[in-house]
Every structure is written in structure tokens, then in C-alpha cells.
Image 1 (cartoon, rainbow, N blue to C red):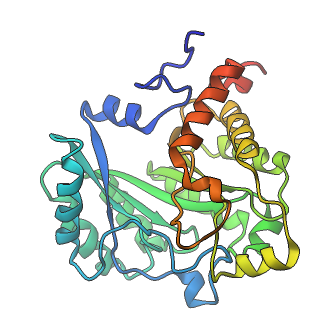
Image 2: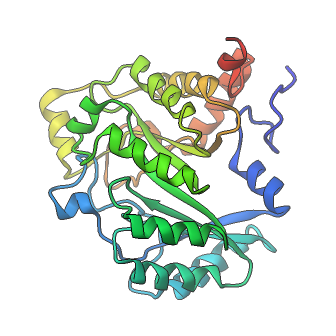
Length: 310
């Protein structure tokens, strides 16, 4: 079957990040994951999300190094695979706006002025961006290609409460609106397989995202990690964990319902073998990616197909 989807350089049937960057910057672009030694308001105010063990950003730089040192260490490793590239500084670990604006400026500005850095991605939460921070982010977005990554996980408030997310859907929605009013790019993280959610609920979450005019999405499968509240809930309630086939089916359905202008930044996760309880099939990341591609071809499907058919 011919691929009807053009927003890909490697014959995938969804809007790939590689295609987006290559089209925008006329170059290979890769993210350099940084650890700015931030905390998280949900840890400060309680135990954090039930699936979280020690914050996000397992693959970010070493927080014991300054940010510029982190940047060059990671860049050097990645350049062996992708020489002559451009870079995006990715503030990945924990909540990267959870600090006074003066501290944010010091950290962000140290990266955007490095050679061949074309932008910043800043991972954060909708309840951790003050109005003063918004003003600074708006200024920053006029000087570099800025993307704010927000964790939503699910549009369903009962799920957000169950996972101890620390904010509700309205808080998230208000934050996205404020960012988009300032022409700041927004990428949203969602998780499939959250306890007691149905397939229909997961599809409702991506349909909801279409209405927010977001720029990108990261789709994750729930990781049950050792020594987390989620592991305790799993032992107690034995909630259903998606099989690989179920996950692939749901992701393909979600892609069909997503506006094709939304860039797919991630479509599966990277758990560490030592900490993972379930699902063990997640450890074979490239098998999952390949099987998603195969299922899209089998269906003769592509991102946004259901929107085109309505």
C-alpha cells in the first residue's frame, strides 16, 4: 500500500518529530537532555504522583555537573551518530519552572547562547507556571524556538485524583490557554493504561487535545515501578495492565483521531529493567514501534484518518 501520509521522512504514518525539525530547521536536530536540579510541587506538597519514584528525567544529565558541562558531555556522545546537527536544550528532569524567575533565567540563558542551539524544550506542570514566569517565557519564545511540555496524563478528573496528580483538568486547560495566547508552543504528555481507565477513556483524552490547538504530544504506556504507590495499588487491586497488542491497538486508534498537524514526539516509553514491575514488554521499545507501524499499514490508516472521514 502506498503511504498516504506525507509528514514523515521514514515512511511512518504519523507526523514525526524528525520530519518536523528537518522541515523547520533544514537540518538534523536532536535534544540534549539536561538536569537543572529542580524539584516538583507535587513532591513538595505530598508524595507526588503514584507512578513516580524519583521524578521525571531518568536519562537527563548529571545534576552534579553544571548545565553547560552536561550539555557538552551529552552532545559529544550523540554527535557520533548525528554529526553536523543542531541542538535543542531539553530541561527534562522534574518540574523545570518550579523556581524563582531569576534562577530560571540563569539556567535557560546559559544554554540558548551555545553554538548551534536552536531552541529549548522545558518540561513542567500546569500548576507551576506563575504569571511572572509566563512573561519571561513569552520573551524567551521571541529569541529562540521554545516549547513547553506539560504533563496531563488523562483528561478524566477521577483518574487525576486517583494518581494524585495534584491538579485538575481545568488547571491544565487554563495553563494551555495562557501559553497559546502568548504564541508559545505546547507539547502534552499522556499515559495509556492508567488504573481502571477504558479504551474509550484513553481515546477521549486525545480527542480533547485536538480542541486545545496544541503543537505536539507524547504518548506513554504506564510503567509500574518498584517501591512506588502504584506498585502497592497494583498488588492490592490487581488492575488490568495493557498487553502489547492492546496498547498498539489503542495508540493506532488515538493516532487516527489526532489532528495531523500535531507532532508525535514520543509513542512509547523507556523504563529501566531494574526498576520495572510491569509491563515487561515495554523493554522491547523498537518492537513496539515497529508493531505500531505494521498495524497502521495493515489498517491502511494514518494520523487524522477518522477526522477526514467525519
